[in-house]
Image 1 (cartoon, chains in turn orange, cyan):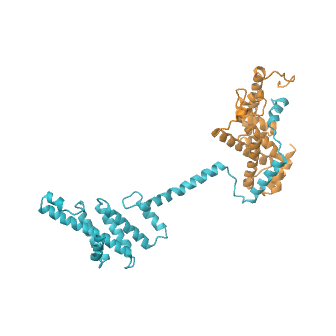
Image 2 (cartoon, rainbow over the protein chains, first blue to last red; image 1 turned 45 degrees about the vertical axis):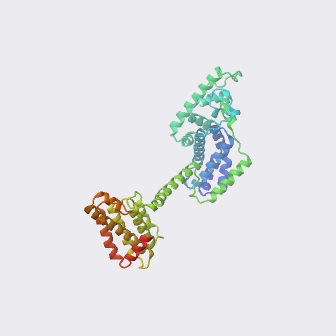
Image 3 (tube, each protein chain N blue to C red; image 1 turned 90 degrees about the vertical axis):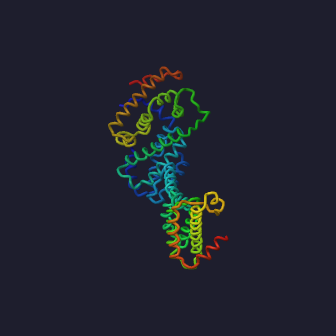
Amino acid sequence: MSEYPQLDRLVGGIRQRDNSAFADLHRLVAGPLATFANSMVHDRHTAEDIVQQAFLELAGAAHTIDGDGRTLRAWLFRAVRFGCLDEIRRRKRRPEVPTDMLPERAVNADIEVGWDPDMAEALCSLTERQRNLIVLKHVVGLSGKELADVMDTSRAAAYAATERAERSLKRALGAVESWGPASFQPLPAGEDAE
Amino acid sequence: MSKLTQHTISRVAGPIAVDITDDVRDQHLAAIEAALLQAPAARVRRRRSRRAIVLAAAALVALPVGAAVASDNAVPGDVLYPVKMAVEPIVAVLGNDVRAEHRVEELDRIVQLDRPQPHMVEDAVDRATDAVRDLPASDPIRDRLDRILDRIRERESLQDQQSATNDSTDKATTTTTEPRTTTTDTDTETTTTTATDRQTDSTSTTTTTVGDRSRDG
């Protein structure tokens, strides 16, 4: 939360296409942006490229930015989300399946990479949008208007969709961890129960 | 409030967390600086959409250019002939002489057709004589047009002879005595008279000599 005043101060410099404002903005949000991109494309180099592309787009559209620091940050996350969706679409057109990374379990290889098998299977049962909402809210820390802006929806709809996504993930995790073959480690007591 | 525990969240977040290294940051900042030096309007676009735009633009250019190039050899009556007529005035480098040469060339090719449509010959003669009118009297294109008009007249007179012999003798003798020119429709007669009239209007003197030359060569 502490970065909001900093973000607000940067908006003027970004609108002026000031190089140091861009550098400061990059220092503040490039990491979370790349993490979010990585949650969609599962390749950190691709994720970093998409983040760079988003900043280049911002450089081209800087004069159109208005609002506060949150608006600015939401603009970048939205650009990254569209960059990732483009990348996913491109992969579907010409799929590159690395043979040494074939999944051991029957889950979508695209999203399994990175997460532990149970989590991968649970997240795999969600929609791309639901995964986005969970990552943006819990990993990046967006909420309310910002979350709605990134997902191109209303505040209320974003809130309801996030609730639904969380319930779905919990249910999927419960099912996977009680039935799944890889769940021999008992969870710490009290975890994942309300 | 959250329905997810901290443990679940760290399981989601841990494997996907990306820390931007200094190298990557420097690389990004250099690219951003370069983008900022460009004009603000030069918005960065995706490569795919740029390629689509280039392809569309190329198609837009290639289509009319292709039609114009293909129409270069068109002759009155062809589908592309209107295109040729539309393009020629645009191509400003074409002088009067080039245009006249084209009209004469078209007339020549129409005359050499197996059985040219009478009205096509007529129109082509009109166009050629119109185009030649502004040229100097010594222009070789005039000579060429004269030769072609002579040939038309020659053919016409042969047809006259032939129809005359057809009237007097029977068909068997006609086929043996007939010269190399094949018979055309009787309609051609009107065409050729018009052509000859025009020809005597515009170009007066050299008709006989030129006609002889063309018969020899």
